[in-house]
Figure (cartoon, rainbow over the protein chains, first blue to last red):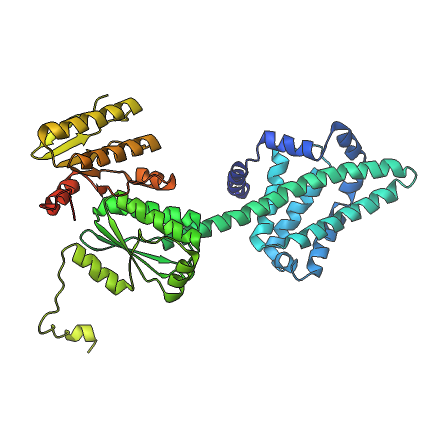
Length: 325
Length: 123
């Protein structure tokens, strides 16, 4: 049962990575794994199977010697699991079947490494350590025929590099996935379009604007204009620290697009630095209506929409609840 | 496919219902130019709500219609540009400079009403 539960995320990962039969075959082709190699590997099969635990220990012992490796070896339950998987790996390495099932096994181990955040250079060093141990024992056994022993080892190394390709890919893929998730989260947080009054929208922009984000900002603004039937949009860029010609262009594009949909845009919050750099860059800002700060922009927008905000002659006395008394 | 041109008081409304070929657009331009004179229209509304693509030729033609109308004494409002179309136009650097735009037909009419007495000639 436990196996089944473990299986499905791995298969999902394989699908996402595009690790299918054709891809596995291509990977074999890349490392130049041929039937000759399989024959040679079978000659050293017994040797490896006989010392499988010894070789596995070399890998984990090496890991435990370094600070970075202890992220894995320090966790008992994960270490046990990794040991079992590594043992299965070493046995499978000499089985001669390097298909999709074999790749799935590699992925399982890679996912485990990724979970503990195993340092890639340390992992590679440990793997090298493991291989050199295997190589030494092969040489020892085939002292009479060193050439055959070396060839068998080279064939095994092809399999090892085939494995590394999958494991490294999986670890990189996992990292990229995390980055993508974070980017998505930032993106969603960073482009709110707020309705302040009937037909008046506020678009606060904070942080760095790149092409991609500018596109998202524009898209969400245009959708909001349609949904709210907005006539005026106040775009506040107080939170944009620096502006270069590219960013200015993005802003102008957003303003132009909004205008095409019948909404006027007021840009507010240009700091003195930003204003100066825009002038220094020689960007034509005649298309932008700018007002110093957000307050001024809101007042201007209300004027445009025909709102007339007056302060009541005698402001209402705050209720006790509101003051917390 | 021909574009119906409706008359409402002093306003001509050209409501584009489906994707137009270049030929259709040029026909629309000719027809509008003529109708403005016939009915002494002071205002023209071009409704693009149904369009999901607007290429450079179409943009240029619409700009041409607006400028022609102005020379004939009528102001043009382009209404109903979809978000995707607006975005694509900006990306492609297509603009409708100097031409009024509004969200939809209702807004366009409201804009013209608000403008009221200010006719095409402003000093």
